[in-house]
Image 1 (tube, rainbow, N blue to C red):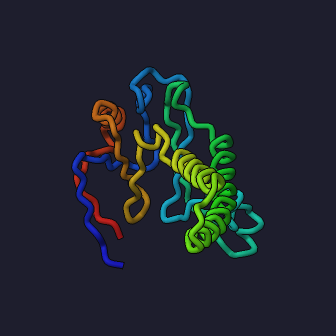
Image 2 (image 1 turned 120 degrees about the vertical axis):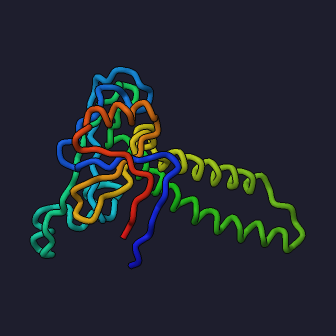
Length: 198
């Protein structure tokens, strides 16, 4: 794989992955933080909707497949009560959207064939065709809402790791929060405008 150079309009922060200190303010709204939210990332690993869906999630499965436990970086980010992330409710909502999308796609195929048949025979299609279109668009719109990045994930975006996974690249949406983050980690962090991805 050829290395690719990525240039950023706004500078991102390159910081040592161990011992990161986040400012005690919410990265989304700037209010004082009273809750800590866990944000985890694994270098070069596929992300599953739920951890239990990962075939190598349990220690016994990893032993059976001969896979060592991947190095995970977990960060505790201080946030306000309004922007805390609670994983279980999001996972349930996303799982429900996936199931509904499967059913709606099957319904859309049959609806399209039936509407096409009606139009081919010169008949207009009835009210059920409009109901099917409404249901399809509603379910897909709710899926877009379910899978969009949450406000915290937009404010603190993990770009990736360097070659040895010792340093992590983080993009902050708010420049004031980025400045405070650099002050908290002045010995281990620096601004960069470009990175090289492998």
